[in-house]
Image (tube, rainbow, N blue to C red; front, side, top):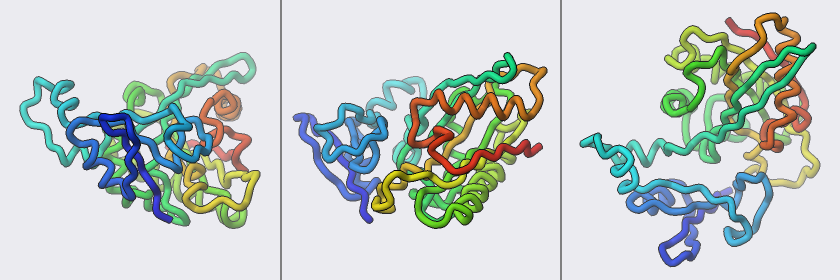
Length: 262
């Protein structure tokens, strides 16, 4: 199913384009507010841009020149392929037996969701080609204690099959993390959340893509007295505090299997 994208013109009108390349070309010079009919930051289904005030600001080429005024050469191709604002973050913490662990959730924006039924491709391309560049722009992970790769799968299919699919997705993220500088001297984990527990089974593949987000979690700090199971319990409780409830809240998925991978 074709995803419809919208950007706001100078006159405040919303104009529709049919693919991501057209959207980025339209925003590449001056920048613009954008909105996708299938993706609301509030995780609420809206029918048109006027109903939703949560828009993404895409910086244009002139905006990048202003921000990076000390840099003489900026490639437009880089901007078109890697949006600076590709990550959404939230800080959460959980407690177990009186001991606290703090985490930073990082969720990649709509264009980089897992492709339906695939474990090595996202909607914009191959994971191994895209994720290294995305990791270069993740914030707050460099000084973390560890990184957790989260595997998710949407409501389609059987629960047992989708748990396996979510696990393979987490594994493929870990393969890339292991070779990236961001994971240097850090503990690595994988968290298999399994299949999304849908309330309604009639949604299209395009609409359920919100359930297949690529998610990483930075371990900011953890009480050194914590056992692995206490750490897991703290993470479990921390996810309940996430305001990104459709995409990562533990009760939204069928599974919670955390493994230390080092």
